[in-house]
Length: 261
Ligand code: NAD
Image (cartoon, rainbow, N blue to C red):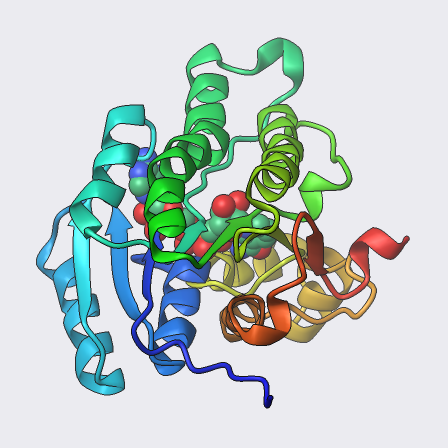
């Protein structure tokens, strides 16, 4: 039988999806036919407008649900409110950079809860729905920092390594149930947030755009090219397709060779 990437009739819940990678994944899943539920902790007109734009462009149902991924009950309520969750993308994440002995405790707690514990809560809420539907895909957006470390990013590196462990356990607990669980590990991705850093970096290093991107920002990414949010979305669509049915418990790098070094 031919492999299909048609996701019509599936509902995808994407945490932290009013910008960046989460939004890019939402667009690609919707382009593949999935209904999508967007999320963040805000509740602005712009948030709801994003859902409307996706719905109108892709001809799918798209809604926006406010839920704070630092709070376990709200993570679980997001899935309950979505009503269906065939595809769960755990993407919400924050960063803080400081040496361990100066790392603010509140920042450590926030990173562990948003980048790691939220995925435990949403997965716990989604698996019964997936088992009932007889099909499911859990995709955790980890990072190259889920496989390798950098100084001053203790909480982020710990959370991203942790989410790869959670991914493997989820895969084992769902094996043989037409449910898969995988992590995607991006290197440096060109999101609006990263794009906004480029002018400052050019000024600091007195370099033109191409040089600062290649020599400074992408120093650890051998391709010396950013990954794009569309490529991350395409990777998610691939994992959701029939081709991904036996891919489970893996950590797929989209990092231009970063973790090959
Ligand atoms: P981003 O800041 O554009 O997106 C983060 C998303 O999470 C936003 O939608 C934000 O609103 C949401 N969020 C933050 N706190 C939240 C909370 N408490 N509750 C609900 N939502 C919350 O950044 P991004 O680069 O798109 O990052 C998305 C994911 O990709 C993160 O997990 C990040 O660690 C990971 N990642 C990013 C890169 C990169 O280069 N941009 C590389 C590797 C991994």
